[in-house]
Length: 55
Image (cartoon, rainbow, N blue to C red; front, side, top):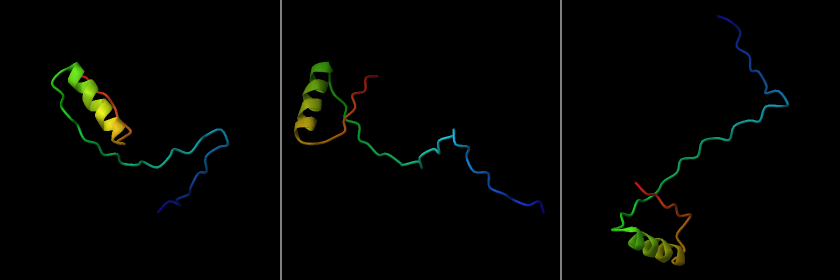
């Protein structure tokens, strides 16, 4: 069996951060004006961070 060895990163390489799973909720809006109202309401209620998605 070959010898296993660990290679340390060179000084110019930056270690990648560990993966952190993310979770979210999608709220369907009727139109753009409804989307704006929902966004502002959720933001005022302290929810966040918020992302606006248009498909």
